[in-house]
Image (cartoon, rainbow, N blue to C red; front, side, top):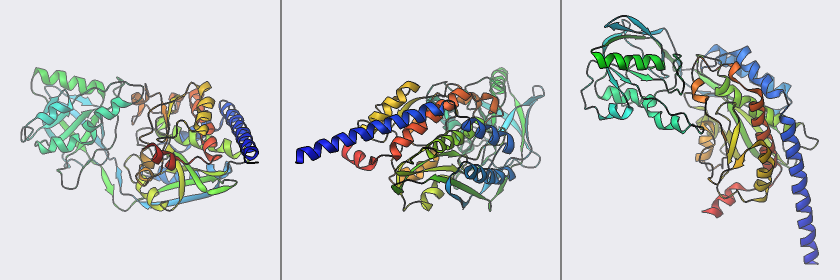
Length: 456
């Protein structure tokens, strides 16, 4: 009798896996021609535009998110407000004043303080690498504007950005420690456009604060060549402001699970962007990919057993949404979480929570993803995105689709991050990947925490 029961159980399990695989494959194939992701990214970039925290456009983006989630049939739509000081770009300019006049293309770095009203005029000290700046002795930059002109490596996985990111985030404080009056950094860009790329700098409360801006790549090279010939003076003017009392919002909607709705799969992208562009790749694409994937799952004849929640996080670029979200949802049974925040170009690999790669559900996922030319990496996911970092720190497992970042940093944080750079076929390939994987997880009983513990 026990043998018969076991045989029936295995047969039923095998049938369930086969049905899930067929449903996931059907979702995958439907996603490749579904227009939802393109409609979302087109609307968010065109109807709302740039979306910095604290701006009128960000408030409009909040309302856009609620309207879109409602129209697409999501349930339990929530707007969760949290306090978030906002940095606002004001008038800014830079120019060479000696040995001859020339305009420089800059974008102030997020959180940068303003220059004095009259601006700053000083000789520049140019460093070819960030390491060269760090090697400069204390006091050696007194009365100067420090310039770091380190180029960024183009890589498929974006690791070149991680390697050079301290030049932007920590560079202003390091230059200030050595006496600099202001800081200019070559844009963290893999392209050769003179459109500068902004991004946030980090200013610890106990560190000196100086104005900081990113230079267009050709302008940064020009400064280095000119400085090699003799002294160069630059005049910098920046007038940003900070609103200490502003707020941001995390907006979410759900596909409520049919059997275990209290168990939640959290996916999403970030709704905010920098101000130079509508942020098509960063991160309207992530919003579109995950929302479209969940909407396809919602349209199935039978919804998955677990709940799928799409979150549009409200403050990724200058931080805050990850902490607010983790605090607000600390008591929920979140099964796994991930954020799409690496543009709209094709996914090529998937990293799963530790210990789960060989699980039958994930083996099914590998087979379903294979026709999309996505493989399951042998390395586990170490990050699920900036906005789920708070959840991960609280013990929530994460997964990560690795996308082709070969051209992402040509566009990232610049005026060039526009809708025309989105490739519809690649965008939909991502939707297909997310829809099939998320469905398989949501319709299963896979326990990533237990698998991770067993793998230790």
